[in-house]
Structure formats: C-alpha cells, structure tokens
Length: 235
Image (cartoon, rainbow, N blue to C red; front, side, top):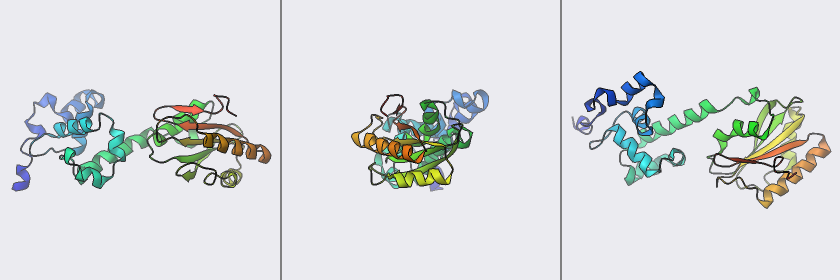
C-alpha cells in the first residue's frame, strides 16, 4: 500500500491530449518534447512529481545535453541528490534508450564507400563523438574504397607506443586491404590535431608508402565536428 502512495501524481491525472503516449499515438514521436520522451521511457514519477516533471528535472540538471547523462556511472546517478526522481532502474532505462538511438543511427561499415572525409565522419561520428577516452581506429578499404572492416587499435591517450605501425598494418595485411584511413576522437570535442597526432600520422603514412598500403587520410572526430588531414593538406 505504501508503494502505491508514492505515485499518486501520475500521467493518468493529466488531460488526455497532454499525455505523452496519447500524443505520440496521434501525432508521432516528433511531436513530443524531450521531457515527454523521457517520461515515456521511465513510465512513472515520484510522490511529488509526474514522470514529465522528472524528465524536466533531468534536462535542467544536464542543461539539455543528455550525452552527459549517458556517460555518468549508474551508481553516480542513483546517489545524486539533485536527481531524486532517478533511481537505478530509471537511470538504466534512459541510458539504454540513448544507446539504442546511437545504434539505430550507426551505419553498417560494409555498406559504405568512402568518397570524401565526410563519408568517414558520417560513419563514425555517432559512435565516437561522446567517448571519454581517445579511441584510435582504422578503416580498411578495398580497391574501390569500400570499407572492408573498421578495426580498433588503441584506447587511451594517443601516443606512438599505443599506435605502432606493426599493429596497424598487420590488420590491413590480413584483410588484404588496398588502403587505410586513420581515425580517432578528441574527448575535449575540439578536433584540432596535436603535435603527437601529426607525428603518428606521418609515421603511419611513411610505413604505408613502404608497404604499398597507402594511408589516404586521418580523421579526427570532435563533438559534432571533424578534421581531415587530407583536407587540411597536413600530409
């Protein structure tokens, strides 16, 4: 009985045309605010707030940037006193929904033909722009610049010891790649290349020339933006 009392303010008490599920059914998901979408995901509110109110609370705390919510630890979210309406279950529900959205937008690498730096950015942006650590990947290409595979090389602060030509080109050779493209992210969100980025790129570019597997470009992914070594003529 006590459990039921905690949720006496609920969506059912709202006018029918204001209820998130009814709005979605009639007008589509695009008609809902971010708070209403969160309300549908978490389903229930608290003793003092509807699920929509809880959604607004979440958005206000993260200044409408749900990527911050996604990257917070579940226990950290659960213990946050400013997010009193979000327990472990609701935190998991929201994080799962965000992850599903990222996966829906993620393209199948095998269907991509690289025609420009934008092609690479479109392929990797959703997956890499919010990562908290630097992640270095290579795109393995066939003779027509179609992606054979995307391989992860290293995770952590980028340096020459983590990204060795041997580790990069052994994967390219195994897949009979005609060429490769380098890619990594900057957790700061700024894709401007560091001196170490430039050193690593030159080292791999030179190795590719020797092996006959050219490095066509190096793409740095920032927050919603990217930088191309080829485009900026840094090769």
